[in-house]
Image 1 (cartoon, rainbow, N blue to C red):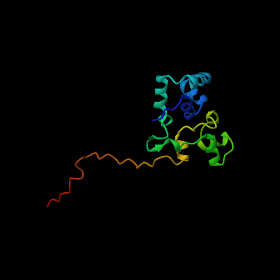
Image 2 (tube, rainbow, N blue to C red):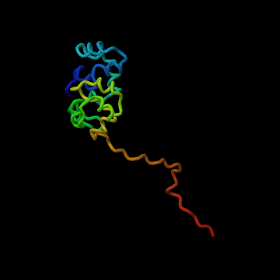
Image 3 (cartoon, one colour):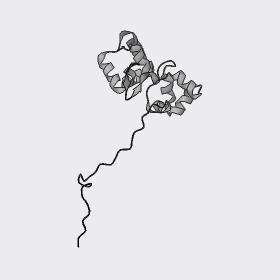
Image 4 (cartoon, rainbow, N blue to C red):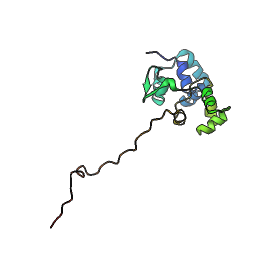
Length: 144
């Protein structure tokens, strides 16, 4: 199994500014994490928050292979968009959030992005719970 570097993980999470926002720290601190590594407790927090960012190309999460992810530049090109403002409008996200993603970094696996990429699984509607466990065994009785 290949190990991801701290820098790769930060890029997959949306870049320096996004990780700083998530962790409530300043961007220079995140830049330092790129070189010194992500401390185990912070790494565990980030992994719980976005497990897809920690998946290697040979692993899968929820049936989705991580190499199907896409960079922000490639996503804009695929959608025929030229600016972050246009991409933010399509994704229904704040422009500041989309602008914080690195152009060559992986786009976070947000539901809007996954839907655009066609990576969401169609779930069957939940069946209502049967209140009476014997309902299918009881037959109507005719009384004379």
